[in-house]
Image 1 (cartoon, helix red, strand yellow):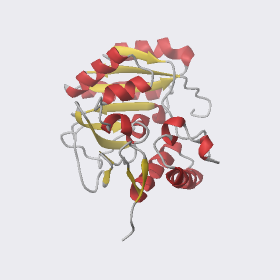
Image 2 (cartoon, helix red, strand yellow):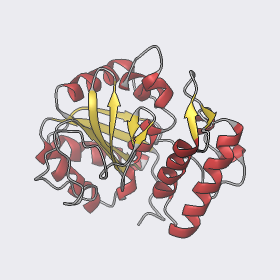
Image 3 (cartoon, one colour):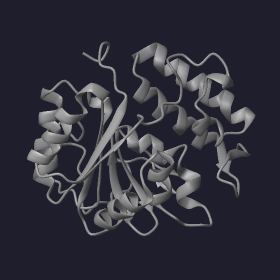
Length: 255
């Protein structure tokens, strides 16, 4: 399915209840939307509920924040992702659970926008993706209030179909962005020129090479771009620190 699925736009909506998120994810998967094209963010996921395709029973999330073995060590200002699910701290919102490709966007390219001196939080990230600022502000406010944001990358000729699906599932504040979420590379990265501008801008030349080497190694092993991206960012985190501009450039001193 994923080989012929041509995602060209991103449709998003807010949902008030977690059970609505679980339902809409199942419906999106049934309509052929690949798992790696669906993103979810929220503060108040409960441990007794399983989010289809993202959170297994062993990936317990309590009160929107877990530390230690489940989510790994600190990743700059955020906790590292695990099997597509992670906890991140965003100014004005707090600690949120992020599942799917939006987690990698927040963790990597957008980290400077979130943690920078302007402190614009999620609004900055969403506007860089092409979302109107007023809509981004609404999403941030409703996430802060404990609601949930879902984003799905869909073919342009099926936008109307998925808009109706989100509406019928209880989605509000529906928005369509005329592009998909940034991926680090179009397949194998042969050089830094293959990295997306969003990723490249947040890595020094040396860190770019580190990212590419780890990304390609995991991609060759698992044929999974999502896992490869997570592994590459984790390796960068282990070997570098961020500078004052949000660029991973300071090589860590080995003990």
